[in-house]
Length: 302
Length: 313
Image (cartoon, chains in turn cyan, yellow):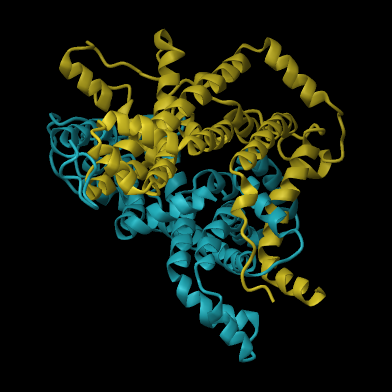
């Protein structure tokens, strides 16, 4: 039985190994099927829901989607929507969230890793609780603040205000986890490096910038990616805080399938929108595979 | 000491501002709002109007007499119980299977199962919209029609003849696919910490795969199982985003797809826009959540995880 288990090889080989791999494949079928339905449908003239659906390859959906013509079969008059703007809006929110998360988490994570201060362990505990906090309880209060401040904002600036608010509010949700992930990376950097800088008369901030940051680049990359994807994928905050005409890809798709619009919606065009929306996620996924898995387990453990 | 304190404060300041502005203040506000008659977000007029416990009393009456609210409570219970089971047991099974097989194939599977978690909410909803679509083009209908199991397309999540079970099955399944990767990742990384020699020695002694799983792998992650269970319980009680999409797009029945957390969200922002009432329900959720959160910290034996800082000068 024990033969063939070398260092590093799989623990189960032969028939049993193949059975396990096939069982996993079977269990994964719903995932594989749904994603391929989405992507194939965006290039087809009908919903490609199963292997025996006959479809014609076409780029028509993508053309209609990018031109903002979303109801090609309905005889009603419609105004084309500005899809490029939706994409830019999505990117603004995602980019903004990334910047805010990095700005607020790098210095804090450094402090938690390197300094001792009043309530240090209490604060770290609090961050974990905040990460698990019922988001729905927060969003009611956050929206009340939003409405309250909004009355002081001149009308002309109200759109900017919405964007800034949604970015900071969404970023705040990511900060507890980001700090924990980054602290893990800081903890692995030898302290002697900064010490040398400080002995030479540099400040803590200089030490952080010149000696430590270059060594935690993977950690910063991981946190930046998580933050970007969080902002990119967000539906709820964008839906609640941005004015209805400032859509992102998420709220655009939502508006196509939400109640009342369904009769005029042409599903293959929505598939094109969904596929485009999925691209950055897939890219990050393929590029950062191991970093992603390791960071998730490290971060989640904490 | 004072200088050190100031220095730490300087580094922590951005985080502290955001935590106060977007966690602590909103939390106080939510609790405050639960004692006011706030509707339609008229914060300037109604925020200093007190109605005492009226919202809580209404909540109590709704829980006793309102049939729709009964559906919400039932759905919450069923959703949390079954999804939790999938997330923990499914995560454990996935972790064991991917741990046993060849590393490259294992990586591919783990990434595949992580994909739902990383997929934008709207896209993930879209996937299941196509899958459970009520017309003959829907994936599930298409398969079953071809196989001859059904004669005409079924509206899976909304057909009254199959409620509530069909709607419950859909929300549990869809959320399970997202949640199961959490346990998988935690358990898998715990398995990786088991010395390989231990397993190899057991195999040399003639232990079957099943015995290795039962006597080595599972006992090794006992604590992780407890931790994942409590943590997932907490996150399931408070999660609403995926359900929001499924209900909004009529993939599932409105009430048999709505849990308490989603009920709070819809009450505050979409249906009746009664924020005072929604806030009262939210406060109940916060209380449940805080208790579970504190339990989790205990289980994690948190104090052991906080190592003293290095480089404190």
